[in-house]
Length: 190
Image 1: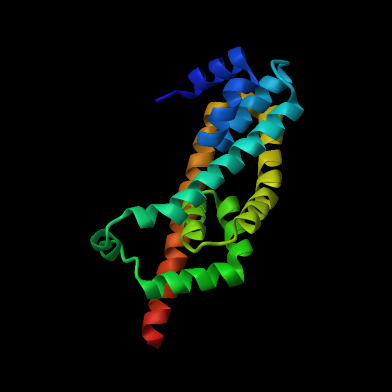
Image 2: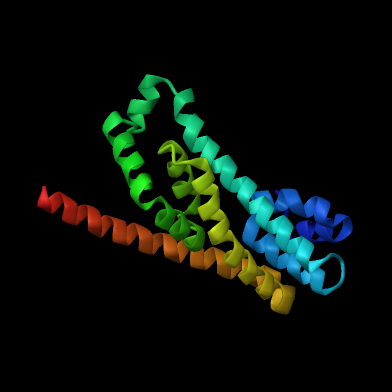
């Protein structure tokens, strides 16, 4: 696995060509590092912004594809083990038909729930154009935020990565807590 220093050296040496695959695999900290390198004059800030947005959207499309086509590759037995039932599929499709945009934006901005939400939207067979539109809507300000952070305090990229990780874990814990409370209330009503 690459360290942040190795990623920084590769991006610094090869520019936007290496930034693109890194942006697909690991968005926020790569955006911070690339913006810092842009400030130092190694690449264009506009180029970094565009590549990071495109890379993030390619990653989002891959998660959608995993959700859309992944369950079909599983045997009926594994689908049952994972709890993929017709009723749950219908409920998931209904949720994303009614609240897909809000759910995607929530996932995009919390970062910790994003992957699961994107996979679920694929499993729900959400309209791909709509899916990508909402992800673009969430990606532009998120990427701009990390670009500003990287441009002005990017030399602290290692500490920034730690904070991104801690905030993501904290948000994930909050999401799990709220989810547990909602499930408990639902079970009491039933």
